[in-house]
Image (tube, rainbow, N blue to C red; front, side, top):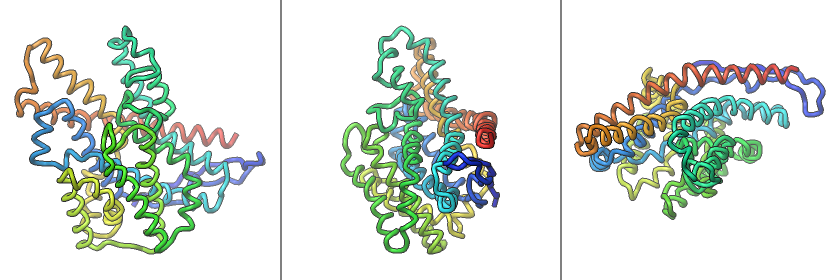
Length: 390
C-alpha cells in the first residue's frame, strides 16, 4: 500500500514559532476505498448521462434498475469521506488540538476540492454566457443560471443554501461536504469518545436519519440535493464514517467473504426496487467494512481498472456534467435543428449517444485529473507550506 505523508511547518496559535508538524501522521492509503469510489463515480456518470435520453432511461429502469439509483453512490461518498478524514487526521487532532491544526486541515481540503470545482464552474459559465447574456435571469440572485447562484457556488454554499440546482449540478455534494469539514473538530470531539456499543448505536442513528428523510419523500425530490434538509443527509453520514473508523480501528471488525457477499447482494437487491431502495443506506457501513476486510470484495476493488477509476473519480464526478450538457444535450439539439433528425426516436441511437457520453466523460475526467487536479493540489499545498514557514 502506498504510504502518504505530508510534512509542514506552522506557527502556534500564540504566534510563536512552532516545531515542524505533519499535516497528518504517516498513514497507509486505503486502495480498496479508491476502487469503491471509482465504481460509484461511474454509476453517477452513467445515471446523469441518460438524463436527456428517455428511451435509455426506460430501458435501464426495466432491465438494470440499479443504474437509476445513483443517489446511493453519494451517500457512500459521504460515509467514506468521514472515515478517511479520521484515518488521515484523527491522530493529528489528538496530538495537537488547536486552531492551527484546523487551519492546516482546511487548507488541505481546499487544495483537494477547489481547483477542479473552480475550473468546471468557470468553463460552464464561459460556454453558456453567450446564450444567457441577453436574459434577465442571468443578472438575478435567484435561478439555476444566475449570477447569484454562481456566487453561491464559488463560496461552496449552493448545496444547503439554495433551493434549486446550480450551474455545475453535481457540485452540490462537495458543498455539503465542505460544511462537514467546517464541523469536523466538533464531530471529532464526539467521535473520539465513542466506542463499542455506544459507537454502534450512534452509527445506526447516523444512517437512520437520512433513511427517515428519504421515507418522507418531500418535494422536490426524495433524495435531497439542495436546501437545508441536505445537511440532514450529508452530516450524519459523514459523522457515521468517523464512527465507523473508530469501530474498525479499535474493535478490528472484519467481514469474511461470506458476510461480504451477503452485504453486497442485499445492497444490490434493495437498489433494484425503487420502493425498497432507501433502505440501502442502512447497509452502507457494512459495505464499507466489507471493502476494508481481506476477502474477495477487497481483492476486486484493488484491481487495476478500479484503482484507475478511483484515481480519477473526483475529476470524473466534477466534470461529467459538462459532457452531459455540452455533448449529449447539444448533439440532440443540433441534430434536431440542422438535420431535422430526432435522435431520441430510436433506442439504438440513443444508447450509442449515451455510451459515447460515458466514454467522453471518462476521457475528460482523466485529463482533468492528470493536468489539473493533481498539479494544482500539489502547487497549493507547497504554497501553503511556504506561507506557514514564513
